[in-house]
Length: 117
Image 1 (cartoon, rainbow, N blue to C red):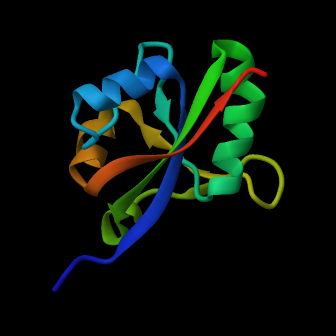
Image 2 (cartoon, rainbow, N blue to C red):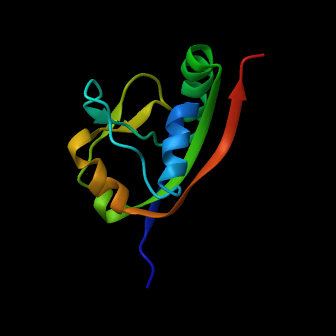
């Protein structure tokens, strides 16, 4: 029997995407000291909004990634709403990111790429 999974999304810049590629698209890189939380988002629309509004202006390019995580494992995290109806994300403490990565089922996929026009 296969595990039930939940689809999550993560907006990333080109540097983070290179680190994900180095991990063979099986996990996210460790957070930097000034980044105590890893926050994947709950829907593609929100991930795309972050990519277009933040990553593209800041880095010139942004990507939307999509991945599956074991649903049972995710129950330990509260869904946080940080704005409007679509602005739902999980707050994963940085020190738990390795365990989070171990619960990703399959590979992280790039589903969107946006650049400065």
